[in-house]
Image (cartoon, rainbow, N blue to C red; front, side, top):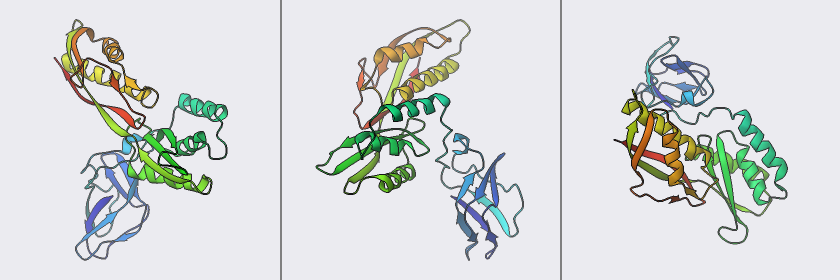
Length: 264
């Protein structure tokens, strides 16, 4: 949502453009500047993917001058952009569909319906979670993180269109389980601490994403392996996960996300 200011009565039409640097967004609704000189307009990024997820205040110009329009800003971050699934992700989803008995509203059917929605990275189904006739579907987004309210609503609506009559369905995002990392590093020759921290963050994030919905714990040893996999690091000591040196349990309703990474 962007807020556009200008002369009262001026019109913003579907397809009109606003921009953040070279990233273009298009209006998807017609709006008229109100008497106070503003209009809130929904826009969508012209470029597919996460590139359109930008911070508050990033949208600030018009690539083409619009009559009677003075300025534009986004008072909230732009969200909801996801990259296309990779070939490997598509292949995994295909084999999952042909190998699991997703029939007659089974557990696997609900998982399939959820994963048919763009932006869903994975899903779980909890049958009879609140008594007979109840089903809970838990989802994460394509970045293996917490799903937005919009994505939850989209999954809910899609399931409602396909589910058997009689089931009471709840769709929720997995709850974030923050993993804070602290470690003392021995750097490889010529390596900088800042670059080492950046590489550690990337490595651990990939591990957490890969195992987001498939394991019941975050491995202390695997985190150590992620650290040693970085070329900038010769060794490490004093590694803690959430101020402890143990594996961290992950419940079936949680998704692990990387929190603060502290290096010394």
